[in-house]
Image (cartoon, rainbow over all chains, first blue to last red; front, side, top):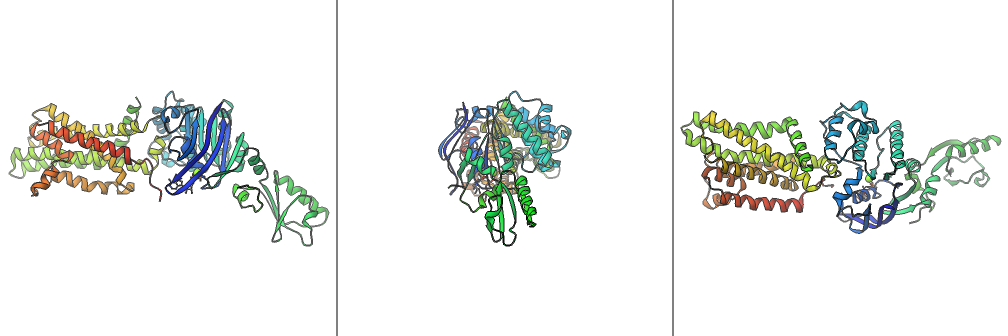
Length: 296
Length: 239
Ligand SMILES: Nc1ncnc2c1ncn2[C@@H]1O[C@H](COP(=O)(O)OP(=O)(O)O)[C@@H](O)[C@H]1O
Ligand SMILES: [Mg+2]
C-alpha cells in the first residue's frame, strides 16, 4: 500500500513558486529521500505533507488522507522533525519530553524516547544549554514519541557530529525495519545512499531525477581531480576524465579506488599527479557539473 | 483532555517566566491595590472614592494580565517557532489557542478576586455586593480580553514589539474606565469608550447591571474569534 502519494504538487510563497508540480509515491515501510540543495523546495514539500501548509495545486495523500483537511487524523499517525522549530529554552530535556508526552496519545515512556535519541545522560540539562546537534536529537525524540506510522524528517542530521549522525542513521534504519515509512530530506548524498530505498533529486521546485536515475547520479558522485601531467593525452588515462584548464576530473562511485588506479598508472610511467584531490562530491558538485547529466 | 494539556502548559510557562510574572502580576496588582489604598488614606476621597477606583482598576488588570500577557506570550512563541512545533502534535489549532486563552483568563480571574479581597483590607472597600454578577462579569471579561489579545498578535510584527504595541490598548482601557483618575472627555468620546470590553466589565461590577455588558462582551468575543480565524499567524513573517 502507498503511504505517501504526491501528484502534481504546486505551492507558492507569495509570488514565488517554491514547488512546481512534483509527483512521487512512497510505499508503506520504505525510506524515501528527497535530495536537493538549499532552496530546492524540500521543506515546503514536507510542510505540505505534514498538513502545516495547504497545497496550491495537485493532490497530496498521507495514509490515504488529505493532510490539510484531515490534519487531526493524519497527525495522530505521523511524526515530524521540522527543519527548524523552537523549544522552551528554560525547560530541561526531561521536562520537554514530559510536556510533549502530554500532547501525545499513548506516548513512549520518557526514558525510552531519550534512549532512542541518545540523550539519556542529558535529561537534567536545560534546553538552552544543549549543542545544536543535541537539540537535533531532542527533535528526533519528540518526533518519535507517538510511535508514528509515517515519519517526516527534514534534514535530520544537520549540525550533528559524525557519531551522532551514525547513531541517528541507525535509529532510522531500525524504525524502517519495523515498518515505519520514512520521508527524509537531505543535501548529503551519502545520507540518502545509506538510508533510502529510493530517492528523488529536487532542484528549483522540480524533481530533476528520480528512482534509478537519481541513484546513478549519486553513484557517480565520487570525484578525483588532479593537474594533467604535461604532454599527456587524457584519452591515455585508465579512467575517463574531463579536462578543464589543465585540471582533470574523474567521476567514480568509489573515488579512493579510482585514485589508486590513477596513481599506479602514473607511477608506472614515472609521472606525478600534482594537486591530487579525492572526495565524495556534494550535491552542489552534481549540479555545478557542466555535463548535461541532469535532464531538465 | 488535550485542551487540559495546553492549559497546563500555558500555566506552567506563565509562572516560570520571572519578567512576565513581574509585568503581568506584580505591576497591575500593585496598581489595583495601591491606588485605592492611597485614595483612602492620603486623599479625602474616602471609602466611596477608593471603591470607585478599585472597580476601575479591574480594567487595568484585564488590559495587562489578560491582554498584554497573552499577546507577549504568543508572539514570543510564534517568533521562536514554538507554536510551529506545537502544531506538529496531535493538538488542533483550536485546542492550542483555547487552552492558552483559558489559562490566561484563569490567571486574570484569580488576580481580580485577590485584588478585591486585598482592597477590602487595605482600603476598606466593601466586597462585591452581588458576587454572581461580579463573577460573571470578570470571568467573561477575562476570557474576552485573552481572546482579543491572542487575535491582536496578528498586528504585532515582531515579539520584541509586543509589549509596546499593547501600551495604547492599556492606556485606552485605563483612561476610559477612570482608572487613571478623572480625565475630562467629550461626551461622544466617553460614549464610544464605554463600548470597550474593559469598560463593560467595570460598568457591570459598579452597577450590578449585567445584560448590556454581556452583550458588549459577546460582540467583542465574536469579533475576536473571527479575527483569530482570519489573521492569526503561527509562524513569524519571513522578509
Ligand atoms: N514562508 C516563505 N516565504 C517566502 N518564501 C519562502 C517561504 N518558505 C520558503 N520560501 C522560498 O521557497 C524556496 C524553497 O524553500 P524551501 O522549501 O525551504 O527549500 P529547501 O528546504 O529545499 O531548502 C526558497 O527559495 C525559499 O526562499
Ligand atoms: Mg529545507
